[in-house]
Length: 395
Ligand SMILES: Cc1cc2nc3c(=O)[nH]c(=O)nc-3n(C[C@H](O)[C@H](O)[C@H](O)COP(=O)(O)OP(=O)(O)OC[C@H]3O[C@@H](n4cnc5c(N)ncnc54)[C@H](O)[C@@H]3O)c2cc1C
Image 1 (cartoon, rainbow, N blue to C red):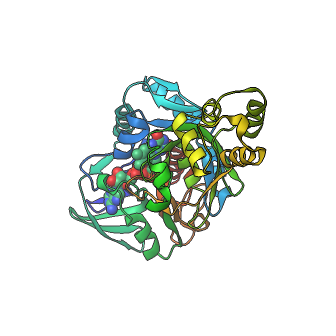
Image 2: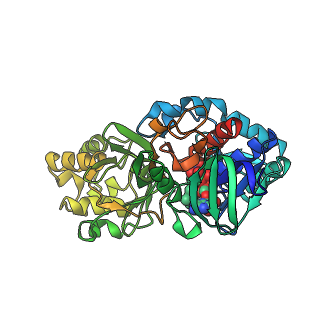
Image 3: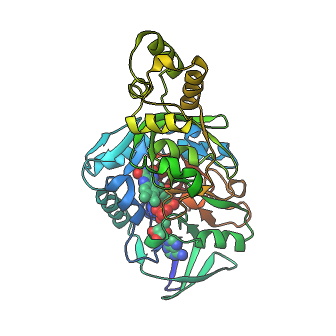
């Protein structure tokens, strides 16, 4: 064996790469993990507001999207949230459930990084960091990686370079380019779980609502989410918008019920019959006042007039506008603000049990670089763990 040779080389020491390295190493494989940044697991560190929403107890196939949605079924079944929770418990990391099955560390997300590092140590994983991988060549058996530390040989190569979000902490398109160079199809990457933006002129009436948050129902096509929305200076954000952004394509509209669970038309009609209050005061019973004001102005209604003086048709129009606000975003806040990448290595190219390329034996892709994208709420890490585990067991 050559001195720089290993059973497995893994490019990218993030969530999926470290998981894969630990699993393969603990199976007795000689693993080399190559990372170009000076720190490892940076996305884990910044995730979940610093507390890492590391999984979701409800994770199943319906929380994932991609061109071939069925692909992830077997991978996810092979390593479940329960498996990861057991690992977290073994390392005595405190955690709690926040919302809809989302599990967060009690203290810092650094605990998850330390846990993965310790698991790698147990698997005698070797590290090469920081390192630049200049090129990768297939050999008769295995792969040769030309790196800034010299050549490295490995029987198997796992690409775990993640997605494009947050380039300033080390995200690159290296994995996508490598896949293309080996002839694998790549679904064009797009920012997902990302705030949406609007043309400045059309957003003017709403820009002053920046900071207002509100539980809404947001819909794009058949997909909808009941979550909080946040107005920003440039558009919309908050969990509802991040979720729907993964389903939104340029040119499409969103429909937003700003007061879900309230029949505003009925409320206005009843108030007209019984109340001496102004239109604005009645509407402000169901909406934050700034929001109510914006809607009243948008429809050119006299907010200070007593509601009893207003025509039924105008009140009905107001009720309909609040329940079915239709907006057409012009774009997203892009890779700087996206939490995840949509698209990536086409899963039609990969085996669902091993994540190995169907065309290039010994070449595996795991984590976010693959065209499997989770909803907001711990699903993306669960994909990273499950795909890392699957490849770790196969290499
Ligand atoms: C702000 C933010 C918050 C998030 N919060 C959550 C959350 O709470 N829950 C959740 O489930 N998901 C969350 N995510 C998504 C989650 O972080 C990713 O889906 C997950 O980290 C993907 O794992 P990965 O191993 O595929 O990629 P990464 O964890 O991104 O790891 C990829 C690694 O590869 C390295 N790399 C890249 N290019 C090269 C190269 N050319 N050579 C060598 N190394 C390279 C990178 O430096 C990095 O260390 C969040 C994302 C962001 C941006």
